[in-house]
Image 1 (cartoon, rainbow, N blue to C red):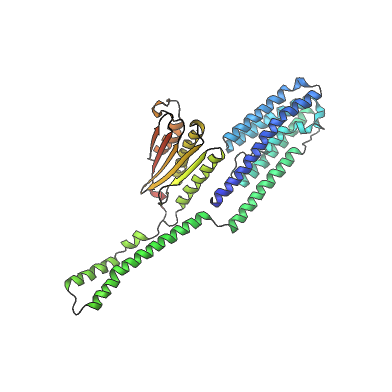
Image 2: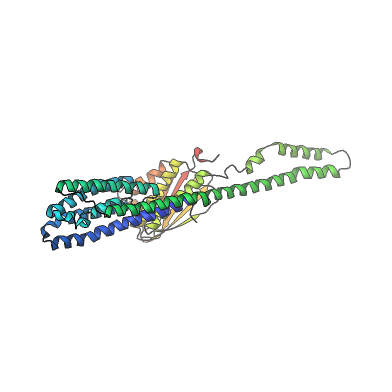
Length: 397
């Protein structure tokens, strides 16, 4: 079962990706609609400009689907708004009566502007982007009406899209709030379980120390027939010194029972793997140690960025839909190995102007004082080992 925050992000991303798919379908269906409407009105000469605008909207949707971010969403609204204006102006310029019974044709790009969320993973953020897209569509529609000299007729399309979009993300927000109150935080439960396990280990060690010192010493005193000899007194003094020295307490104290860096890294890893699985790459994740994964927020970001770059290379270049990700922790060191059985490549033959491996992977890890090792043979797959030292500030207190 995924942690609560990760599960919520996955569901929200699925909804926003669904809206993105609907936008693609709207644009594709707009091509035959525009051609049919203009041809039926004897305006075949005015088809080219609207079609080119629809092609531009389709390209923007592919960009925001491939690289979802705030920057690409702003680009989508800015360029998409211009294309929507040109599209509407071309149609109304060819036939102003389309502002009435043909408004559903004029408003097709405006409808797409509302569904700007892309791959948003937070419901509130998706809701805000939808409202912003709706405002942009209203402004564009008004400008088109003013340019064509016709009454402003926004139509129901963008408004209905906003209503559905808002309803979906509002429902997700409410579900998230209910989960926060009623569904246990699995990450906290895991931390509590680890803490109790360490406390149990501490109690067992304490019981062993008491047995080996106090109880044995009492037995010696009770069974002695007179004055204790020098060896017995030396044994008692040694046991008293053992109990007085607090070092045995520190050895077992659960000082890392609750490790927020550990939970943060694990959740980031699960979220990253889930994103690639949505894109068609099956990633098997394994961890070969029980030690906590302790990284500073900066190291975690760079480490996950390098892992993401490795998985991106598998998805784009390896010719396989399957990869393995193995996390390992040792005292003072965190490693991640990404393995695929794809086409492989010659690491020494990578051109100097190809910055993907050097910048996205090697530079990130080396900036943390870590190392990167790559094994690859053509036709036999690729293995990448990322090693990062644990910084002082990463240890839980």
